[in-house]
Length: 401
Ligand code: AMP
Ligand code: MG
Image (cartoon, rainbow, N blue to C red):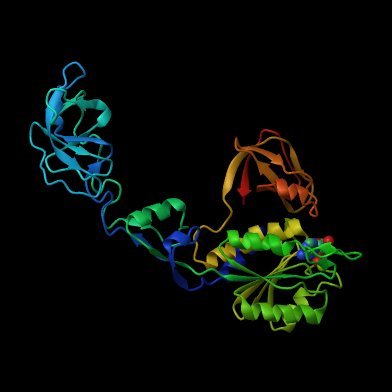
């Protein structure tokens, strides 16, 4: 049986990123960037005011106070989007608003709250405070220098990066293409949601779960009809899925029972099985295969096992297909709020709930058919074989929600 990390490395070694594509910046959130982006302008673009107030020469108001205000002659005003024709000379000021370009000659902005109208001279303003040069001025290029690298290849387009690129004038970005991921559920006991259940039937739930996970990982899920436990039917659906998708993810039918047809059907269509079984719980009977360079991920049918193996083994591959550099689930530190035990001889990825304060609780019963605990969970805790973790221990939780 393969160790998890070895399985991950073997999977990633087989993944070649898809060709990149250009996407509008405003709908590309979360996607990995396929080229590094640079600034063709300075940010701020020009010196401008951080406040509603008055452009002055700091020297002119150096001795200003509430008791002894300094009066400066008002030359005019500059709205955001305008350019001042006036130069601020000794003894003068210009009315500005947030974002107004700083007029020539000025070296500071006094906020409106530190001024008042001059009751005697209507074309003068009284200044009640002194200030340092460049106070309340946003300096050209202090945020980003023209030519600076804004984002690197493989970085996710976060909302903050969207803000930065948009401010630098970018409308489009080159990003990794989204892989089409075929979702095939096998099992003669499975019924579509919304239909009445016959004897021995259960509702199929993996395609919806996996579809959500594929979305979160940037892929385009494509759901196929339910597949009976039958060799020919399984082969026919696999062939269709490989013809129409970049990646195929099946659930169920990869164990050792006589109704487990996925491996057999895949080999019959000319697919090559790369490995079977990974030393983790839940999710041992995981299959990797490849057909003409496209990957088959055969997940166990148990809904919890399917989710865990997707997160640990399929998600990194989908991200690499898109050219992402960060492939694994983010790990967050937390403190165990209760003891957890793994008596087994495989690593147990336990469903846990991490609170906002960092307390980590078991999300409930860990049996692999329990979905109520899955619904409470937002992370997985990797508990080594034959290990007890005590209350209060520091742990690192893999987060997916
Ligand atoms: P299998 O991996 O096919 O042996 O299935 C293991 C368990 O998961 C069985 O109890 C199945 O009924 C159940 N199961 C398999 N596929 C699904 C599915 N798509 N949705 C819900 N349960 C499933
Ligand atoms: Mg089955």
